[in-house]
Structure formats: C-alpha cells, structure tokens
Length: 263
Image 1 (cartoon, rainbow, N blue to C red):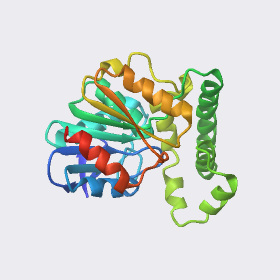
Image 2 (image 1 turned 180 degrees about the horizontal axis):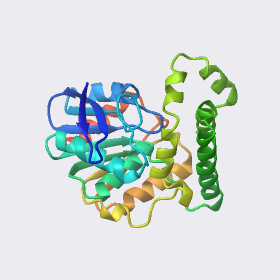
Image 3 (image 1 turned 120 degrees about the vertical axis):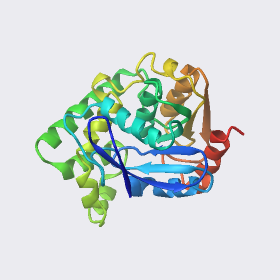
Image 4 (image 1 turned 90 degrees about the vertical axis):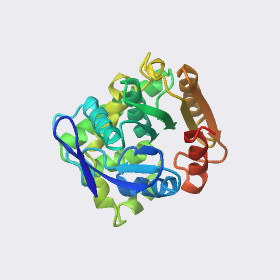
C-alpha cells in the first residue's frame, strides 16, 4: 500500500500493479480498491495500473469540507505519481469524476467513461435526482448510514428483498463505513441541478475518449451516453451487447486494452 498527498494535505491510498503505460482506475459510488481490484489486476497484464481509494474510503483520508475540486486534485496527484501523464478509466459516477478531471485540464492521455449515470433532458428524472440529493443529505445528517446505503441500493433498482439479504452479508458494514461518500458522488453527478450532463463540459476534453454502455442498460442511459460521445471532440460510443452496468473483467478488459493501446 502506497500513498500520495493531495493538494489539501489529504493522504490518498493506492496500489500499483503491473508494468507498462500508466492507467488510473476510478471507482464509482461506495467502491474502494477492493471493488475495482479485479479489473485493475486484469489491466495490469498490459499496463501499470494505479488502483486507489477515493477520499473518504478505505485507507485514504478525508478532509472537510468536501468539494469535487478536491477529488480532481487527488487524481492530479496520482497522475503525477504515475509519471506526469496517464490514461484514466472511470466507472459509473467515477466516470463523471474522470470526465470533470479531463475537462479541468489534467494530463490525461486517453479516457474511458464507462456508463456515467447522467440523466437525459427529462423533467421527471431531474426531479428524482434533486430528491435523491435531499434524501441522502437528510439521512447522513441524521446519522442513518444503514438507511443511506439501502436508499442508494433501491435507487439503482435492487429489489427490497435482495437488499434485506445483502444487509446480512459480512461486507455490509464496510459499505456503511463508506456511506458518507454517497453525498460526494451526488455532488460529482450534479444531482442538485438535476443530474444532467453539465453544458459545455464535454467540449473541454481534447483527448481520445471511449464512452461505454451496457447493452441491457435502460435505453435512455444508452442514448445519453451516445449523446455524450457525440459532444466530445474525439469521442466514440460503444455498446457491449448483453452486458449490464457492471461488466466482468474478462469481457471489459479486452475492450479497454484495444482502446488504450490505440489499436
């Protein structure tokens, strides 16, 4: 386990795997190094991979008050540690963070945005995003971490009966320990503004970018990802047939290797 020190003094824990051109892996909501390790280990056959705990998770520190800009600075510190420039793979809300970092001007060489959950231009979904931001803030302010995780699971479509079974799993307490970071991901995705793609953001990303969607994802999500790719100066959209939001490494990594190596 290694650490870099971000601009505000927060220690960010990471593991370095493999050898080759550097790639930083950015996990989504409630994810830590262990969550993204299977993908990182598979990528490490081809690249030097920096797999890290986003601030507030695992072995990383957490300095208040939170701001998305601090997470962008965390990524900048990791890229500097990787040699000054790196490709970045982000999944779900981690893709939203990676997009913001690339638009901010970080030295990203190639970018993969795996199903960032931006809303389409739909009043109902925008209201839901704003309501979610209010709900997660209220639950966390009240110290109801377990309820916050349950609420997030329900938001992503997990049936209530399955959530009850999940709460009995040995890994559930670790999810509760990361519950406060749900508010961070909500800020990354701009939920208080409706959770739609910030206007002009994609146009500020000059690097080759692959936007990935799962073929069994909701049609509105696939369409939103396609529109994101079209808005990127060097964007391309790819749908992985038959896949869901989380894709097994044996399916995902060959797609990443092909794009990140420029084949």
